[in-house]
Structure formats: structure tokens, C-alpha cells
Length: 165
Image (cartoon, rainbow, N blue to C red; front, top):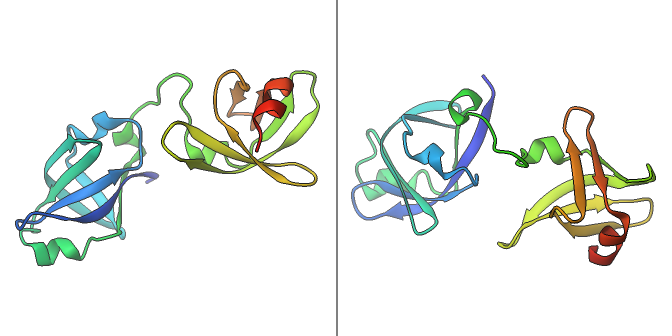
């Protein structure tokens, strides 16, 4: 079964085993009806899951103390791709973008996507060309078309050059 990471446990919250988690997805609705999560290949039942102040708070069955909750610190929670559902328009999985090749509208090869970072405002693509690696904001005026099936991204060359760092 294919899985996707949805949250990283930051710390126990309170004394009764609730876990404060950093969401790893922009699709916040996955936390609304969460029944199960996977952690270290173990299926865990979710008793409660709420989203408050940009964090997910998850309570697991059998985790009813701060000591038990502490064992989950820095662990990642996953759900099945089936439970995750469909992506919205112009939304992509990070794994789909990594390794894609960027081309200008004229067909000139720009480089390859090595990774993605996020500093809060927008995702930043790390793109390696022949000589260097650049950071470029993943915004529509630069990245005109993303073809996941063919692993190809079309960029506006002028906007790309103006915004790469």
C-alpha cells in the first residue's frame, strides 16, 4: 500500500497523551476524519484529531500519558494514498516534482529539480543546471506548465532568470 506523510510529531501536548504535530500537507481536511495513521510500519488508531493555529493535534488509542506520547517525538505519521484522496488543481506531490526537467517555452533545457524547500511564503524549487544550483519560487508567472506524466516543467525564461537565486 502506497503511503504519504501527513504530519511530524513535535511534542506531547498536555498530560493525557495528545500529540502536537506539524502538518506536512496543505490539505488540512485530511485531519478532519482521521481514523488511522501509520508510524514505523505500525497502524495506529486515532481517537481524536483537530487542527488549531496551524498545527494538528492528534490523540492515539492507548497513548494516554505524557510518557507514552514522548515516544512519538520527531516521528512521522503517514496515511494511505487512498485515504488522502485527490489533489487540487495546480497541486503536486513533492516526489512527483523531484527529478523533473525544466525547459523554456522555446524548448531550451534549463535544468533538473533536485528538491523543494518551504520558508513559509511559497515552495522554493532547487534547480540544477550545468554549472550551479539555484533556488526559484514555485509560482505561476515562472512555472507555466507542469506535466507530471512526462516529468517536464515549462518555465518563462525571463521570469526564471529574474527570480533565481
